[in-house]
Length: 270
Image 1 (cartoon, helix red, strand yellow):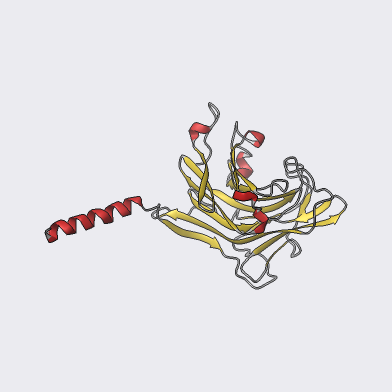
Image 2 (cartoon, rainbow, N blue to C red):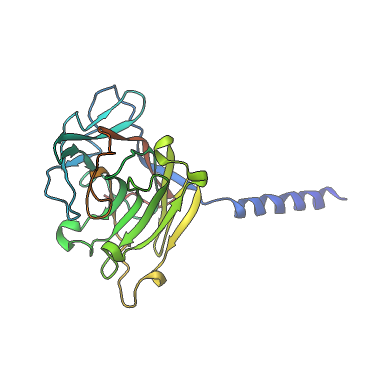
C-alpha cells in the first residue's frame, strides 16, 4: 500500500468525522452565578418583574426583588425561593434579561434543580423582545422548561404564538426514567433554535421538535426575531392549581448556570 494511498484514506476518515460532528457552538453570553453568598443576581444581566395580580394565569405569588426571594448562595447557584407570607399569600421572584440581553437563534440552556410540591410552577423560558408593543402571543413564547408540582418527574416544552397559545400551544413532555423526581438532582434543560426549527432537550435527550409545519393552518411562525430569557418560580395558577396541605414552604429553585451559544459567524442581537 503506497504512502499516498494511506494518506488519502486518512484524509477521508478525518473528513467523515468532521461531517458527523455536532454543530459547533460558540458561547456568547452566560451567568455562572459565582458571586459571594447573599448577593443579588447580577444587575448587568437581570432585571426583576415585580408585583402580583395573577400574571394572566391566576397565580398567587407576589414577585419581589428582595433577598428573601432571590440571591446567590456562594456555591455557584442562583436561588429563587417561594415563601408563604400568610394564608393563601406567597412571595417569589421572576428574573428576565429584557433590556440587558436578547438572542436570535442558538442553543440556550440552564442547569437547574427544581422545587417540589403541589402548586409549584418553576419555569425557564423566552419571549420576543417586542412583547410590550406587539402583545402576547404575537411576540412569541418559547418555554424551554416548565414543571408543575403534581408531576414531579415530568417537564414540558411548549411554543406559543397567534393561533396556538395557552392550552393550544405546541407542546410535548419529557419523563425521567424510573419515576425519578426532578427535585432530586440537577438537570440540563436546553433548546436549539434556528430559523424554522426549535428543538428541546433534557440532559442531551431530544424529545420535542417544532417547525412551521406543526402549526395550525394559516398560523404565523413568530420565531424569527430576538427573544429575551426568563427564570421564575410561580405558586398556584390555572395549570398547576394551588398549594394544599401537603405543600411544604419554603420551596426553592436552584440555577447552576444559564448559557447561550450560537454557531460561529452569528452575532448576538440586543
